[in-house]
Length: 448
Image (tube, rainbow, N blue to C red; front, side):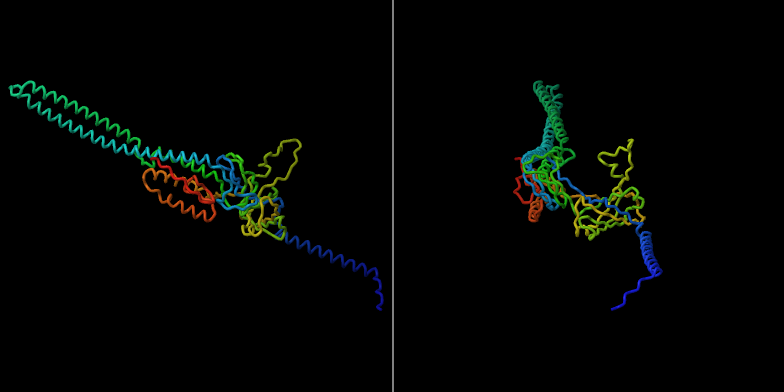
């Protein structure tokens, strides 16, 4: 067995204790120096906040016309594509109004055609009256020559007085005929001018009466189209509040659409942190839903123009006797990397922790350039007005006795293609408006 260790003397114990304390102090000093060096090099350029939340575009789906809901095409949490049918209203009243407007347009085209046809008729009438006038003037001239020739013969007795008086009577009648013919020419010319004032400087298609009726058709056509509410963009449905059979008014919110592929973070920094924040600085973000294992990378795109309290619904009343100073916060918008958001989806309103690297001070604290592109845009409604124009052109062409335009003739093919792809498109006729399947079109009214 080994011999027991001899106890340390007092001096040896003090020496060991001093050595241990020295090592501990050295470790603390090294750690402090390391932290100080890191803070000087990097830490002092970091601004952090956990008062940050995911934000995005929240699109309210509201009808442009009132009506009764007959179909709902999407529910909460559903993903929808731009142009997909969301809500369908009963289009019966709108279709009746459209049919009336189409009939009025057809009648207007026929009436304007009559005005242009009257011009030709009245021109022919003026020519006919002018010919009558020329014939009457020739007859009057012949009668005048006859009277002039008979006057000396009557003085010599070669022509009887009764014969001369008969020649004078014929001359007087011829002059009356000339006067009547001249009046007829003037009347025909005035009728022509009056008719031309209704058609001068325009064509049948551009005539005000036709344009007014065409505007009514477009309005009624769009009303039928708007009985079907489609998604303006891709997104997820939230807060569906509409029910089948419900009577809704124009502008009433029916559901909300949130495009989760276009999100950003609103980080609320203290006013004391704004001094070093600049547009263009990089940021690292962590979402509470994923924790520290997922780090998002973003860029500062702008600093708010005021504090959150300044734009509150009930602003603070600071001019009171019991005022207490509260540190204000300003929202800072941070754009996220779309690829990272696609890999780890976020939702509007989620909490985030933000770290902004403020080392780069080359940016500006406030934006000073104009935006050159829209913040958001959609083209799903463009086809509705084009379809309305095609319908107007089809009715005008049918009542002019012409063939429909190429655009109108090509419409059924585009409808069939879109229907095969399962997307909502406007049909050639408003009686079969934006839908997921092709319905037979109602024949265009033609006034006989």
